Picture (tube, chains in turn purple, red):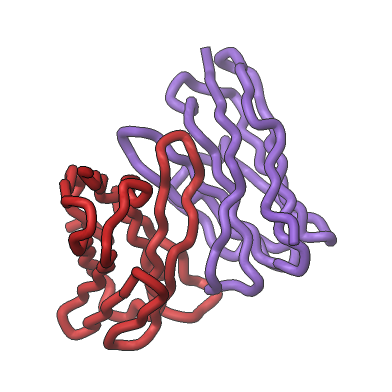
Length: 112
Length: 114
């Protein structure tokens, strides 16, 4: 069974731009969560989607948003990029909510 | 107080010995606990999950949960150099509910010396 896939793997953007990241969960998994990982803050929860609905949200500004499609694929969007948004963005899928999460390889975003 | 706390390390253990990684959490209502391993430059990989008090064994790994003490640990027996990585403890707060979220500790860096 294929694992979680994320595209693109690497991205360089400039301040003020916006970016969209994509995540395809493991086949059959219906829950997708997004995390931001930085050396200083560690792994921080962004949001979790299940059945196309955002079920939970972390403490991030409204510039961070996401959505989930009927095939469980998910996208997250960051608008008006700031230097501090440079991070590894990880997507994780699970069969159901509250289940074991399996991570994708991540998207490394660099904001200049 | 952080919701999930781990000693950042590095924890240095000789090859073949037992590595013991510890994690404490603040939410008494938590029901789901996970250990992940993350190699440098890679994404976290699930090692084990544990939901009930006591021990759970999987190969060389044993997870231990003590809800009364709000403490979860991971033991790695017969440590190998390939076990050198950062180990992340994760706790799903407020148990099995649609309002719960997973909080990760900052991770413990483990180094196995030959």
